[in-house]
Image 1 (spheres, rainbow, N blue to C red):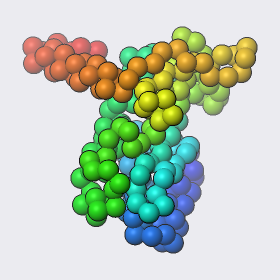
Image 2 (cartoon, rainbow, N blue to C red):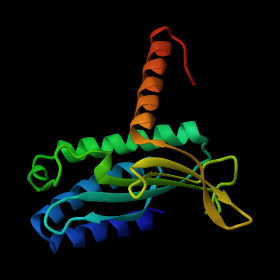
Image 3 (tube, rainbow, N blue to C red):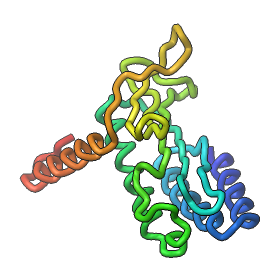
Image 4 (cartoon, helix red, strand yellow):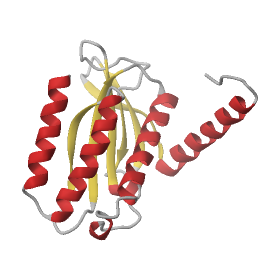
Length: 185
């Protein structure tokens, strides 16, 4: 895994050296964010976006060995998507190149894939894949792996603003518990 991380960082470095200024800036953002995700145990599996003349959107997909249900998948996806958006919007060097400022969930395709230690997909009832689906009105899709059909199936879907609202309510509820000395988990 460490070897893959260094190859990924090296690839970002090579890409950053040979492209237009707006591409170099977004690559720096993606590299910094990917380093943080790697420190949390995530491995980058896809990156890119639409950046011909400016930064229209960014694509980042990560993988981790973990079993999650819909609630935990939502919390992880929204937490990291919002962290990515914050890092993009706070980057003053990238700001002039952003097609839309502020960048929102409509400008990112962000996904998390959950696998077993042998790198096979997690099985029902666990969520295998969660994504901000840019081709479906920017909704969040929660998918399980159908072993018989050997493909992903959408188990649940919701608009991103709804996922964000649930995430924020969960944070406030957990803070209320912690204020009273109760561990909510």
